Length: 296
Image (cartoon, rainbow, N blue to C red; front, side):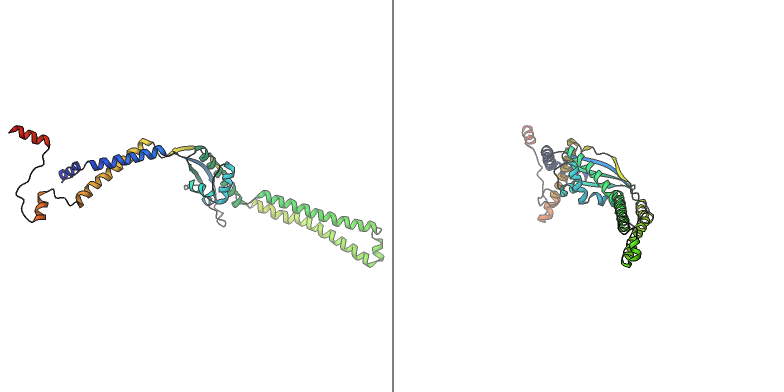
């Protein structure tokens, strides 16, 4: 069986060699005309506290969002579309809260810039979505406080102006309409004073409680990206492709042998003709025939 295997392979050895040569040549041409690929990988940490189950948030989904893509393209100062960036982007996560953001590109500088931009923008956007914006909350508190203080000052000035105009309320005691007007102004002043006090004791406390109850979703860049060549050396690729072509050629040889209709064995001739083989003419080379002629 083994001798028959080698016999078949020797007879058609040119087929595996042709497959290997063509595959190696094709890979060599592709290697020469194609640009090398670079991968820049930035490492970030994005923690999701255990007590944050009421607001689940997936960091890989944040990284691949259109918002992050647009911000990263603007921050990296590159000409890129969102689709192109998403095609070159990959996010790898392990069992911990550490993620690797990789960008694959033929330009190492562009790959590095985009990877660092995506890492920075995604961690910032993740923090905004998960924890909220404390700056805007404090700005709202300051704006509400200023508005209430202005209302209190306006009510107090209106009451003081009324008293000065009507001799410290003397006319209000003789004129019921003036007395009612003064009481309304006094009530407005007291209402705004109570609003200021309640704001400081209640509303401000609620706003501050909102800030303090914001969950601490820690997210920041751990390691900046650096572009590295990927795909292995050209010689290694050529060896792999040549070996694969050789293997395909061997498979083709045995497929041709198995499905072939040629008769090259005595038993095949007997089976095809239904008659016994009388004799076999051996295969001889030109050199063997010349030696046989000289022997005569």
